[in-house]
Length: 305
Image (cartoon, rainbow, N blue to C red):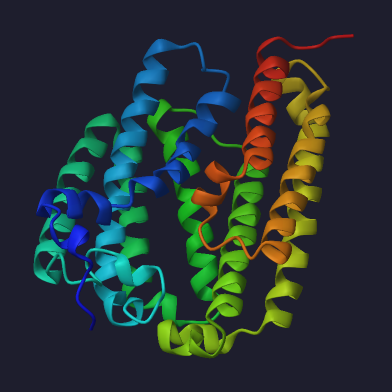
């Protein structure tokens, strides 16, 4: 293993631990606010406080998962052009320290989760357990690996509803699952194409995939995501709940967003980190922002024309 850059080695252990927690990936935990938005509790102060607590707890849980994942992946990460700079792969944090910090984070976060509500605590425990199992075993099983990632996103959405005692629509759970599959499959494709002949060395499971197979799977979930969201937004159930039948006006946003993401994956070799891509690509970020604003305007100020 090559020596880490001097600048990296000069960082304190605390800073390296913070980097290893991957705060840039915590945007995924914003899904816990979905229940707040679609449950029409956005202006309920108590619900907002609980949702923020849920977000912080899931940031801690996901950070712990990243530590364990980096410990199990440290060998393969050292052969990756970018992941080799991660603190654990670079030897800046010992695996023992990383696992110890992860255990403490999980214990504290789950303790706080059960204080929010028993249901929220159970969902948080399920999330932590599933993603740790993914880091150790499930990531090595073809198809199951991406399905596990998608389930993690679904559990985030369910946790948001559990925190504020709002049931999550089955439509939204299906949409979340399909969109998460789309992102996970796109990431696998970028890894496979980007690493080329070294893909197996970095992540053996990549040898079970091919660009053609991934493109077929992406095509299936892309169409399914758009159809499911469209059915959800124009369904009579949703119109009755929100008092408006105009949520269908938001359909162009996911349509453009998915097409833009596919463009970045296929034409710009993006998709390796969905969270970073969202924050770095202005059109994509603008699309998500405008979608959220439009949903708020329709759901909280219903159009009854």
